[in-house]
Length: 373
Image (cartoon, rainbow, N blue to C red; front, top):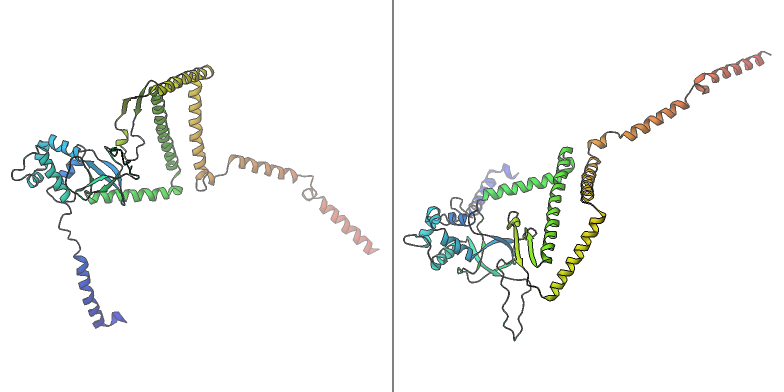
């Protein structure tokens, strides 16, 4: 009845209009979210040719990306012409009146303070989970990490070249929406795996086996090489950041290797020489009983068995085409049962040969003769 009463409908709309106007004043879309003078500078800093960044856990919040103040200082002092070319408005705002290239620590501090004041980043400090408490009589300083894994916001937000700075700049929202759409599409595709075509399932299985083989192969190879160099007194790692959870995908393969000489005592030297002797005896025993061709055949056959096992599991699913078609063994079993039934129903059977009909006729004739008598 409300919508058929004009005066009540008009009063409802008049009351609703101010509320809509109030909610519409929240944020103006015509104003940019980030300062237009310093946005090219932060894009240059976070680009491929910019400064190095890493991820860390911030207390009470999600994971964040951060950079070091000394890396920013080095980049600004060494990239003066590039800054003049791409970030002249930022230099004009931070280094008035001429907007020259940064030449000393004071110029770097001014640019860093401008980035903090415009909410492109904020200063943070290392905050360990269990901070070490020094004894009353010791002057031991806390351990300082070059790239900490836990950060906390500091009250003093003045730029310092020795500090760490959490990046709050989010960039273009369109790319974030695109990545979010791709993630949602990937999750939906993973949930719809049972209805995928068989060629897609088998292809995913092959890709998974290849990826796992490469990954575990690299792990085994780097462990063997590390053990060999450790015996002679060196720490040599291939892809030292491969399993670092705070590194991105590309950063996990940088650097290619790390080399460091060990400073061991006499006991560790004895342990290394003992390990060398045990390894030499083990290699000799394995070489006498097993050849390289045997190992290669074992690896190849095992790899093929794993792939065939996965393909059989995928083709045995209820929704697969193989499950819809009868098996060869089932067809042979049905043929054997049909042949046995045909042998039972042969000509010797009374029902098939007609002997039962003759017997019934004879009994009927005898009963008719007895009745006439």
